[in-house]
Image: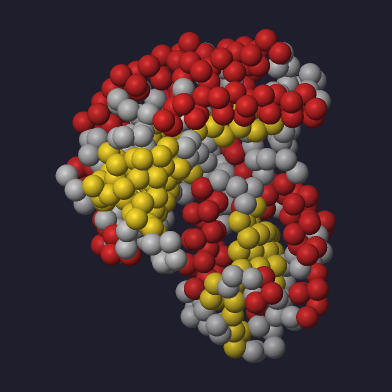
Length: 450
């Protein structure tokens, strides 16, 4: 890796601007920060506007509707920038880059390069080549045989940061494109992750969120599973808080509950447990690996061993063949589980997935109506659930200070955003806050000394 490089006119490329547009999940957000860090090593400085950039990267997501159209549309907005700045190069990464590969270059002539989710660490070399040789590049091969070994690269990790522990997925849910865009599942070694977290602690990080498409199927090369990783990080590092996402219900077991119960002072009592549907027949067609009853048994286990846990979920409405009665099962599940947070989406056919070929697709109107019903039902539940926090004293890790209002905010162990009066000296500290007003995602309170 070179500190500087030259283009085909032998002009030195120093201190150029890079702008990265990011769509999708927390994995993509984390990938973007890694891209910025890698590109800083070859003298590309982050800029906040595409107008100030010499390099634009679209870090794309293919999970939701019309992802390729979004890429086409965004690149089109940069047409005049490309005309006015001869140095400007534009690339697409992320899941759309992995999925579409060279098709993107032929369909979108303004693009200079396309790279997949396994090629992020090659970014400095890719960028060097497109400037030096003025050639278009596609790198989107999966490296299934290579061990998954990366150091968390984060320019400004702050108080709380993400740490990738797995990548890819082996579940092949019939609606999900992730196995085709992120590849087969691979895990980082336990020892590497311990070193990574210790390094972040030395940089001032107080909280880490462990990331993976299926985080609790983690398995280190030494044989350690996710529950072991959690316990080691809780007991053998100085990190103050640990979160994780996203966990798969079929892999959530008693051992994981036991580890959370033993280490409550560090492992936050917030669990994102995507259910996708409340009906067993729909779950079977989704290839989720559990029934409604099995899912509810896991929820009961969690509530018994992690009292006060805050649960959130993902739900897809309008899956092919979903009847009104089956959708009603999903509505009733909201009340039975009492999710404090809900992420819900209309089913959208994705390339390569089995469900895209199912014949009994629902209309957009049906899907929209069901999504609205789902959100309305959750609103009925969420507000009363939030009221339980009023009068409680929560531990809040302070992350931000607003100079104008004289207030600070941070998150509780239940993943609630809490606002209260305080100064910038509180940033990075965990303080006790009595909750005076509670809303589904935001709490207000006052600091108390215990």
